[in-house]
Image 1: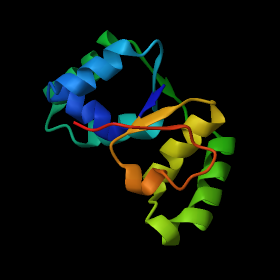
Image 2 (image 1 turned 135 degrees about the vertical axis):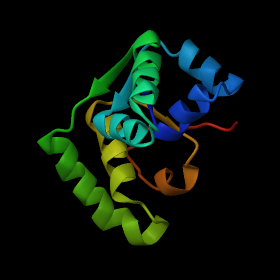
Image 3 (image 1 turned 180 degrees about the vertical axis):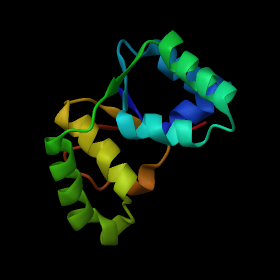
Image 4 (image 1 turned 45 degrees about the horizontal axis):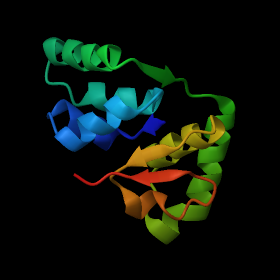
Length: 125
């Protein structure tokens, strides 16, 4: 399962539902873009170490950005940006899930639900 950035943030804030969801997943993946978003939100180097430690302790695998992911994300932007407000980062994360044939869990149902080939699991806290 690929986890969207928002679910990871909830888990880092010790949200029980997010932590349980992550703990129950057989395999845990994130997009390289989600990793960038998490690190961008770090206040300092110690915060960066905490984020990396959290991901390592939970055995997350980071999936790299690839040409097929970029191409699919571009198609998603063309198809869904105006219709449902899909943004570039979300398009890349969704494309990562689809390219790796993974279900994606997010709390952001509005932007992702219209994507037909995305196996979406909605998180509510």
